[in-house]
Length: 213
Image (cartoon, rainbow, N blue to C red; front, side):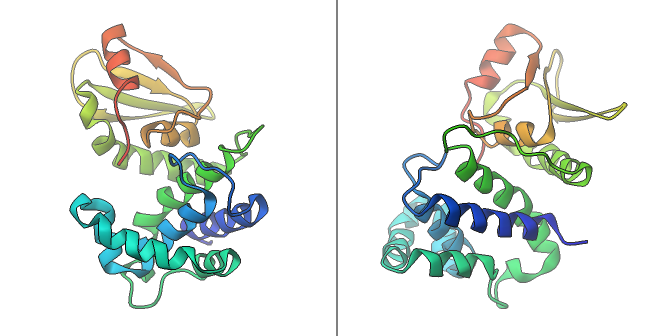
């Protein structure tokens, strides 16, 4: 069965071509072309990729982005579709699954949900389970800035799944579908169907925090 990181990569590329290079995304003032360039730098430019997480090197990432911005949009999208080069760590299947599943899902939704009239996709049970597991792991770092206990919950058929992201008394319990939990934890406001239970002060602290990376 194909990895979700790969199916989301392909779906992102299809959506990018469908809406066009100048369409908006949920990533601030980035266009779809800017987002595609970000993905290419992340996988194909070691220096630029480092600059993504080290603000002091932003100038180097900007240089790479400026060079790519001069290239044809469709060509850039197809480079993303073809995946990382063999020398990239992200070409290793295990690392691809670890580093790219949530990355490509969220960025795919960044394209979809920035367009008028967006609706949540129908995901398979397997995809939902993968997202919940990923959110339960990555979310621990994402909610740290809120400074309050946090738990996420999802009712999978008749089974309730839960994961503690930050320990403590009187946690905020965020319940909903894994896709929506993932978007929330990545700091996106465009999510639907989530419920927030717990002390009002804790809920406010969580929902007003700068979540995500």
